[in-house]
Image 1 (cartoon, one colour):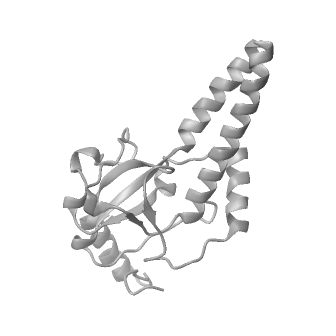
Image 2: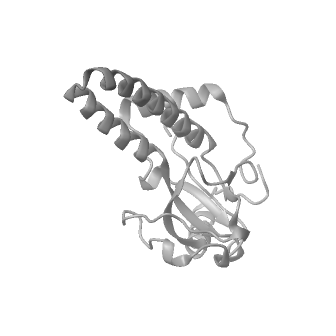
Length: 185
């Protein structure tokens, strides 16, 4: 485990950790998974496991992506608050999320965890794009209203899976981070 990640073992550790996290939390936004630049592994050196990605793709196919839920947001760390446009951040979870705006110094974005979720979401997006192309080809020949409806559904799903919610932390306010991830996501 990296020296930059806290392990919480007692109530007083938890209280101190919560206070550190609260001080370091700048806000919430969404990022574009395909177009934005991310760095994984600095705080969580766990290697990418294709089998885990495959499991997540199946869950996303069956249950949806859940990419804007507080418990599945990606924990993103910036060196300090000047690396993001603070006006692009929501102050509360559950608010409408804007696209995160970062400065050149904020690129690539450092993410504490979530590489499997990101890879699975990108894989799901590619599957949906392939399906959309196939349905469009058939639609061109048939002009079937059901196919047109399916194309619109696929466009909505592609748009949804193209973004992910993030919690943005200011490393200069707390050099250590603790994060929790769901076993399911």
